[in-house]
Amino acid sequence: MKRREFIETAAKSSALLLAGTELPAASSCFYSVDVQEVVRISQVKKPLAIAMWDFSWILRHHRYGEFENWDKALDELAERGYNAIRMDAMPQFIASSAVDGTINEEFRSIRDSWVPAVWGNDFTMSFRPREALLEFMAKCKKYHVQVGLSAWFLRHGTEREDIFMEEGGLYRAWDETLTFLRAHQMLDENVIYVDILNEYPHSHGYDWFKNEMNVRSNIQQYKLDHPEANLPDESAVNAGMNPLQKDFFNQFINGTLFRLKQKYPTLDFFASTDSHTPLSNLELTNFDALDYHVWFNHRGRIPGLNDIGSRDLTKFDYRDTMKNLLSYWDENKSRLVEWINGRMNFIQQTAEQNGLVCGNTEGWGPITWYDHPELDWSWVKESAEICIDLLQAYPNYKFICTSNFTHPQFRGMWEDIKWHKAITQKIRSMHSL
Image (cartoon, rainbow, N blue to C red; front, side, top):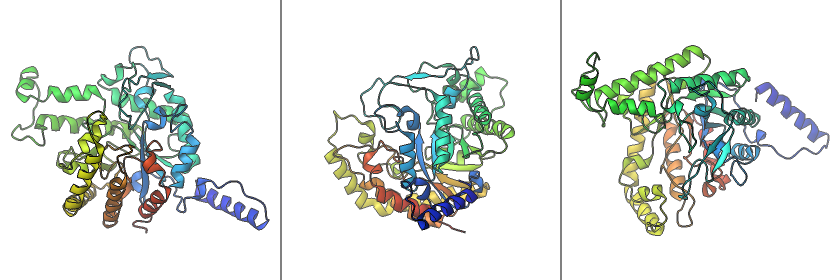
């Protein structure tokens, strides 16, 4: 909401009260006391409380789905104090066919497993990405929820193949998506950034890129197959990535970002990443922000997290899992908190050295969790509380999540409105100028 519009609306509401006229039911528009002008993420002054809504916003938008009613979901999100989301814009489905240039308005997403779905669709369903994106983004603006566009670039059980194996598929998908949004006057309405690929270079479905990384896994073989190539020094291997792969993945992402920034200069661009990729491996030349995901889970050796992540209900007794996890947490908490505090410090330093703001749209305890009668959300919440308190010391963090689980399908988290309000208020009141 523009500040002038907000003031005018508030004035009208006050006038109605003075006149004794009954007001309509309360709207989440008034839950937010610090309504901000929409700005690029690189220019944000006060931290945003951001929720990672990934592709669930569209793949659970069906009868019986938790996102069946977008107005309800967004109203409840705003009620809990969140003023931004990171969402999968589904550019891989908005783009035209590489074969004949046609546009497919509807896709069928096949669900072929009864393992509990954490994110995405829990039933086979159909979705219409182009019309859905326009409708949903308009509603985000209505509820004063700012939008970070992202892409996991996954197939989601659809029949689409071309763009995932296309050399220029990632650029083309985003170019056509941003052009589509611009044609409908939605591009600059509420967009704070574009994250072109989730947790680069690992956790996404852009198979062309992954194949190119695999081709470069054997430097000697690559030399034989590409005798003309100018290869980097192969004297070191860093975190499972050889110099040839490191050189390729940095050139690819920065080149793609550069092309998009040239064509869409009013937007901020980056690719998100996480602790599987050492910061020392990243060249941030064309990044406008650093979204670096970190969890206690990444410290390793926390018992039970792999069992929970597998969601195989035939193998594990979650009573023992929860007991052992909490026992380990209590015994090692101070060491783990010291570790994650060090990560935050290094992330902020790296961002500042590159002239960037930083944030985290996924964190802080487990990577995967879900509602189960023998699992408890207390550790997820405590992890968030600890990390948000730590971030008070890091003013360059400008977009901050509370967990990976701020979706209405995670009832154990979603229904604790009081907790969400308290922690989002803490985030949004940080580092006030």
